Amino acid sequence: MNDLKLACLTTRKKTIVKAGQVFLGQGFTIIAGPCAVENEKQIMATAQAVKAAGADMLRGGAFKPRTSPYAFQGLGLKGLKLLEKARRETGLAVVSEVIDPRDVSWVSEYVDMLQIGARNMQNFALLKEAGKAGKPVLLKRGMYSTIEEWLNCAEYILKEGNPDVVLCERGIRTHEKYTRNTLDLSAVPALRELTHLPVITDPSHATGRPSLVAPMSYASLACGADGVMVEVHYNPEEALSDKEQALNPEQFAAMVRHVRFMQRQLEEKQ
Ligand code: PEP
Ligand code: MN
Figure 1 (cartoon, rainbow, N blue to C red):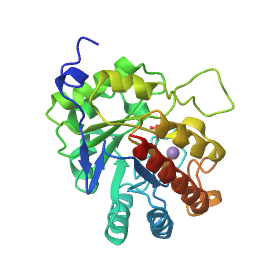
Figure 2 (cartoon, rainbow, N blue to C red; figure 1 turned 120 degrees about the vertical axis):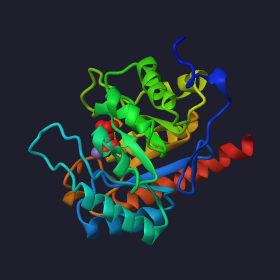
Figure 3 (cartoon, rainbow, N blue to C red; figure 1 turned 90 degrees about the vertical axis):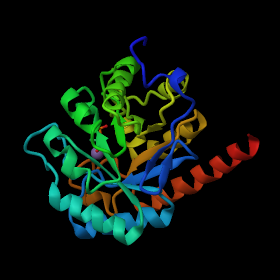
Figure 4 (cartoon, protein in one colour; figure 1 turned 135 degrees about the horizontal axis):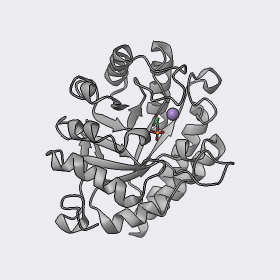
C-alpha cells in the first residue's frame, strides 16, 4: 500500500465527513431508505418511517446500475427532485448514486453525499469527477476488489482535492450462495489499521436477506464500523428493485432500537 499518499493512516488521525448535518466518523450513522426512488408516495412514506425510527440519513437511487438493461433504471432527475422534497419534509440528509461522470456536477446539487456503487468502484473517470464535486463521496467496495484496490480508488478522489470520502463494505463475491454476497466484516478493523477515512457497512446488499440485516448491523457496530446503510421500503412487496432484501418500517425500527442500545453500552464502557 506504499502508493497511498493521502488515504493512509499516517497522514492524519481520523477523518470526520460532514454530509448535510450528519457527521460520519462520529458515533454510529444509520443511513436508510429504498433501493430506488420509485414515486412520490413511496419515497415520502419511507423517508417519514425511517426518520421516525431514528435514521440519520436517507438513501434512494435515482440512477440504478442494474444487471439487466430491461430492469427498472431509476427516475433520474425526477427521482432527485423527490429526494430533495423528502429532505425538506424530514430534515434527513440525502445520499444517492451517480453512475456517469457527466452527471456528477449537476447531481451534486441535489444530494448531501454522492454514492459510487460497487460496479463503478474502478470507474476512474467517475472517481476523478467525484473528486472535483465539492460533496462527500460514499465509495462502495467492488464485489471482486481487494482492500488495496478499494483504497487506491479512494486515493483517486482524494487526489483531486476532495477530502470527504466514506468507505462502504457491501459484501464480496464468494462461493457462498445462501447469501447474496459475503459481508467482509474483517475489512472494517483492517481499514482502521490502514486509513483515517470513515468506514460503514451495507448489510442489505451483503446478505440479500432481511433476517440477516439486523444481526450484521450489530456485528458492524461491534467491530468498529462508523455506521450502516440499510434498504428499507414502506411496502417491500411493491419494491421495483431489491424487494427481497428490504426491511419494512417495523423491522427497521426494531433494528435501530437494538443498535442504539448496543451503542450506549459500548460508549459507557469506553
Ligand atoms: C445500492 O446501494 O443501491 C447499490 C446498487 O449497491 P451496490 O453498488 O453495493 O451493489
Ligand atoms: Mn439495492
